[in-house]
Length: 205
Ligand code: MG
Image (cartoon, rainbow, N blue to C red; front, side, top):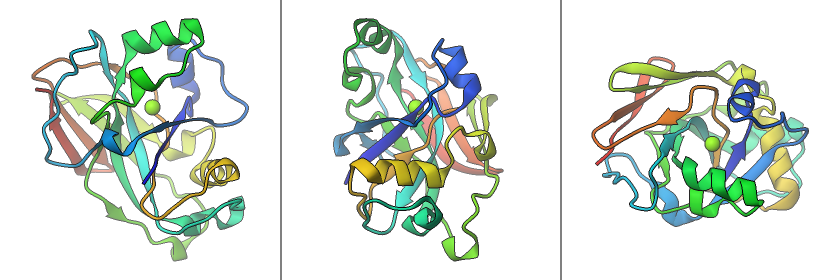
């Protein structure tokens, strides 16, 4: 099982971190040990002083494939949820300045939190529907996203990843975060919504 993540997939978010808007998807990975299942405690990691949440739509791969064409990509996932790509922003900033890989900032244990899965019915449409999502911290909305505002849509992401990596059943794809990323501290309560359905609930311990 692999976890793929897309970086800088919303213009406003790329700009808020001072990054260029990419011409092709920025892809990085997290290992299986990064996965945090629902209703599992999350502990503030000891190696960071600036833990950030990044709320993202997450897709669950349902079919093995490689070199998938965009027009067929919708057949390759059957579940969607809200996830948090937890990031040690202080570490990432240091690594970015040195041009070093991001794993220590992004890929540590439990850094990929996912909510409850919602079934996806790909036979309905090949078109990516408008999907609204949000994250609240201590009952205040801090991030709001809309899949239509992605630079690279689900089909493009799946097709692009599959040019480099085999996609396998059970792989997950974090599709990027909209603007509004920010810090969280011990005691903060994070709640993730797909539309009005709360799929993720987590307290930083
Ligand atoms: Mg992210």
